[in-house]
Image (cartoon, rainbow, N blue to C red):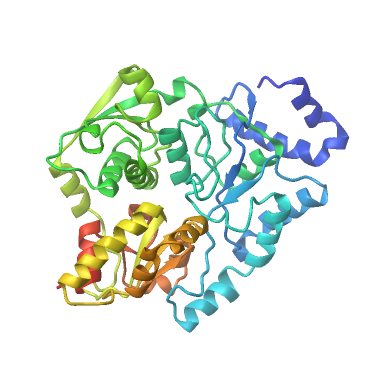
Amino acid sequence: MELTKEQKEILTNPKFQTMGRVLDTMVKYGTLFDAEKMVPITSECNHLVTSFGLKALAPVYELLDRILDAGEKSSQPFTVDPRPIDDNVPAGALEKLVSKKFMYTNQDSYEEQLRKLGLKDEDSFTCTCYMDEVGNTPKKGDILSWAESSAVVYANSVLGARCNRNSGIIDIMGSIVGYVPYFGLLTDEGRKATWKIEIKTTKKPEAQLLGSAIGMKVMEDVPYIVGLDKWLGKELNDEVKTYLKDFGAATASNGAVGLYHVENLTPEAVEQGDKLLAKGYKTFVIDDKVLEDTYKNYPIMWKNENAKPKLCFMGCPHFSLQQLHDWTTKLEKGLKENGNSKVQVPTVFTAAPGVIKEFKKTDDYEKLTGFGVIISYICPLMYMNNPLSKKKAVITSSNKLRTYTTARFYTDDEILEQLVGGGK
């Protein structure tokens, strides 16, 4: 690998012993992927995926202590994924005991390590760090060191930043040393699409189902999507960004997509058009039947398939401010039509702390909480990792949560029906 004079100095000079070992780790990581060089991170803020203080992560805490003891810290402030615990989220006494005393036993001490390393602020715990209310929105062309899959695919695709699908801890290493290896989605060639996805549905595709169908087909490849602008338009407004947030998270979790292009909509597709298609690309047509079959093939992980839902989780990745407002409107109308004043299933909507703060300033906050909905900053996935929580009949419209847990997927319309009418 070609290294600069400064990078060689860090690797060889004893006075950079700890930083040298961090850089050496990043160089070895890049070598595995034939990276030709190390390039500087150019974003103003980084993002870390590991937000949970699991007892099993003891080597991580030891590593961070060694870095901090050497006087090193992140080269930039950073945000981090959502916290795994919120006492306001419904859970039995035994569930809470398991989470606090046996699972996330190092949460407080780990968060203290993160503060010393350079945590942006106390509201920085979210998987949607790129939202305006959070303040970690990369610019087009920025080089990142992120690992959170839903954030990586959003930053690459919707914002035009450049980031590989890194692993946890590698994101911290890159943030500390200020460099990442140059390969994959950082390169022009690596951002070319090897799949052309043609959308031929009779109505606007459900974001989660469309992302799932594409992710399972292309896996880690880059898709170039045509026909979606028919339903979304050609402007990246808040509504479209919210759609692409959920769509992208599904491509990343049901497959391993780190970047997609949408014709006439996402930045690079607007600039380059079908020049983004690599030679020899494959074609996949998505129609109503493909989406229907995708949904039908989801496994049901509940012990009793006919069980009554015990909990509904919405917001994985975290809800946008617009989604909170939209769901308030839908619930208000649906509950009134069904003669109910409260949701019929215990429900948690999750969002970034900064988004929740803004939402609290509006009348809809009192309305939504008045319907019995709990608004939380928690990570639903981390909640569901509790072995006792896995046994619950949990419903969601998140394909990411469905993929990684025992939660059962329903479309937004089906979720709404269960919340306002109890499945009637």
